[in-house]
Image (spheres, rainbow, N blue to C red):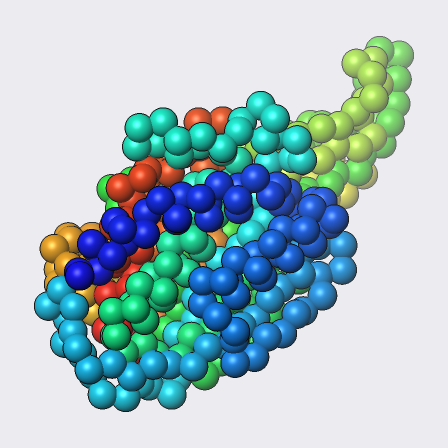
Length: 393
């Protein structure tokens, strides 16, 4: 049976696995729910892949824990769908990365239940990114059943991606060491593309302190923090360079106390996206160079670059070509795409690892009420991942 045929045969059970996974709600900010979700996942992984050679749990504190599982490679002697079998496997593991937390608050399932309507599967987190992990597990399972060689696998399950990976980042970076490649099961591009480049993300806050005064009785006595903030916002938005792939957005602002009081404090939150290190350095300079207009006002910038740039390196380009060839072997065209959003794949790329992201669900609506995964996508992505893993053996 072909890999595609095997994925089609497994589809009813895959959908039930996905149902069970989605119906275990795992909001990023609810520690008990995350514990329950990871416990359920431990059982699913064991059922589908068998016991791991090693299993490590990294405590997440008030966030979700991180599970790291190691699986030995397998030898195969026969190819499937035009991909030649190999004798023996690489000693370097392939890193499979997925997060189990979602943006949806506890109780969302009551108004957004798991459902399958024709080719659409709905439910909180089904697209971002619970279908991706189910596909990954079944890809390994059907490749093993087909007798294909597979490389050693290092599976990471993280519970804090949607809030910036404060705990899992260091675990992800360590897991990249000694790995051959990274495969990330975030949702695919709009037309099923894999993601070979992602922008870096900076999240910053600007606080402005002014001097309060009565705006009517003595309009010149104070130093308006709101006025200073407005000037800074204009300077920040002027720093964007879309041709260079850089966006700067002040998305949240606040300040002042009453309309008849010169504002003593104001603030804003800033989102920055960049496509390269040169633009990262330029924006750092812009932020450091912000100066108050009024001599009695002060400006303070806090924040960080939450995700480094995921550049399309030559190594990632070679990995993509390998994936494209593997896809062709099962009758699938595989395109690539660069996107503005970031993921944990950015951390892997920054460690020098060749990375393919977007091997997860086909569908749409991440973080939105119309979130959905497509049933045919489960088959396509599972077969594609199985073929790619074999090609990496």
